[in-house]
Length: 237
Image (tube, rainbow, N blue to C red; front, side):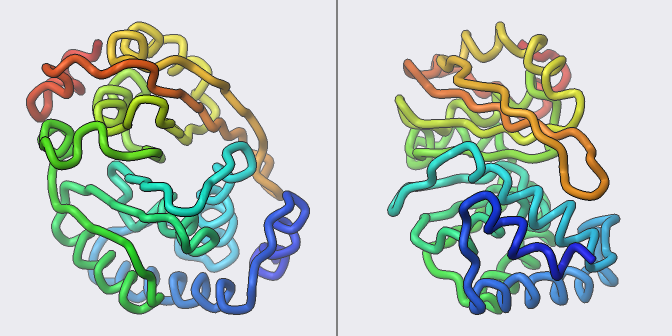
């Protein structure tokens, strides 16, 4: 039963989980299932699967990246809050923002943040392309995360413009991650980032392949990126 092993599996990776944090994950699961009956948040609803494929998978970013107090993280297309809310639970000192294009998901996230008692979480109902051109947000974050949003050549254009110079982009991918990275190298360069590492691992129990693709921004992104909504997906760099 993975829920019971969740804490010990994280402990094996050097991450201690408090009783309060375990309570927050339990609240998260129950709210996810409750809301999923009213709207399509996830196809994964069995408790052990949620703990493995959503919670553990989301926090796997911290196996390879050292989150620091006070960093500003933005999650692009977080859907039901993955990976940023599980990361926030474990690292409450982070300032977390989420941008998602569907108002219903933002409403769910508002309820989730309130129920879990999370502080310093900002939610934005917007397209990533539009949000990335907003002067207030562009090139203002230390970390950008994205999980299961789009192929990497598209995702890079949505995410890299939001990162400060010397900030980091953590793209969370499944088994096709390395092939996507090869296709995205031109886009990554154009947008001002460089690859730091492609970290691969397997999820416990089911042993499915995962990738954490880590990039660092080394120069400003040209002002024309991201292009207007829909264009990155139709005509990837």
